[in-house]
Image 1 (cartoon, rainbow, N blue to C red):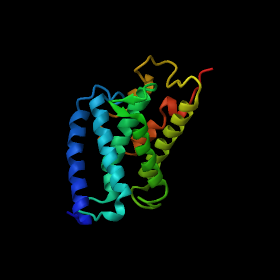
Image 2: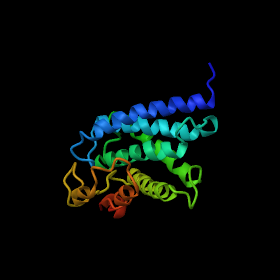
Image 3: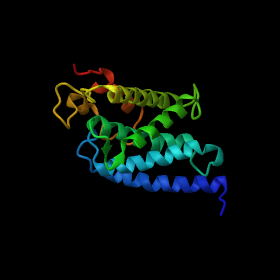
Image 4: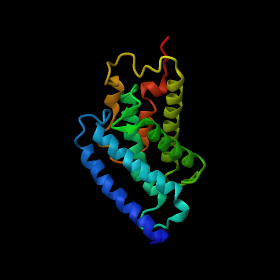
Length: 202
């Protein structure tokens, strides 16, 4: 059965709504937003994967109630934020939350590329600043990941004063009410010690 662009978009939107409910329910159970657990990571990955699929299939979709930019901002950015926090908290494992690190990073790269080529928003549009700031932060993270992978020791210091599993004083600035992962969240994440001051062990 061949579905119409409207039907395909409707099914994606319905699935995203369902996943997002699980995302919010898990979110309120987190002891710390800076330390998402495996279940939260898996939900975020599923949500981001579906958003990326929608972005790549945008020419075969028709707005069924929520536009593509809305899907990216309301679902894709929160999922990306949780994933970045999880990876920053677990620097060494190549798998986390039972997921392939390579697949997760690929989704992030695709999202950043689509934002940067102007496929989602343009200057002077309401959400341009948010999408641009988020893409810059994610790109900075991806660049740091590439340096990490090519470093002979395979490790980078996230915070010299923080013991394993803790992000140091930076984490205290996270807002546990940041349901929509707005501009302030991405500006704060850009100040994470690993992203703002990379330190390679000698």
